[in-house]
Length: 114
Length: 113
Image: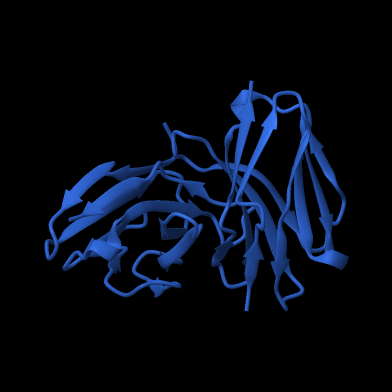
């Protein structure tokens, strides 16, 4: 099915561990985004990419790194996980920054850092 | 700076009642886009509507309607004859020509049977 796929869906990390979240889209979208969702704070942009090989910082980039080596994939890395990074992470993609259908979101990754 | 405010944190209504979810936005840009998303208990984000800043025409889609008023910087969402399946968190969001979404903090709607 066409859309945005996030893996894994759930993960528990110990403080200091590293991990990579994978986002894959098969809609040939240029733009891809990583958001985190925390209670009472809505969604906040971590990093985004406007095309293969490009990345840019969003509102809350500290503690995260990203890569967009292939157009269809957008990776979010945590080098040294902290409890403050416990959150639900959403990946999204779009043709452009304000496409008519907005973004297509993945189903989310629930990350717990203990 | 851009900002989206959803002052209603939680709303409960009895099934078949009408309910309006408020959204107030702030931006100095003249070109922007407003969105509503639904997040049901399953967690995914479902696109509902997009409006650009030059189109103030209200829209109706089934039981859903949206009222966009630039004079008050509001983009309110009304559900008519609410149903239990409408129970979800609803997010209002704003995009300006910089590609970043600015989300409100969401309104949790509970429809009681």
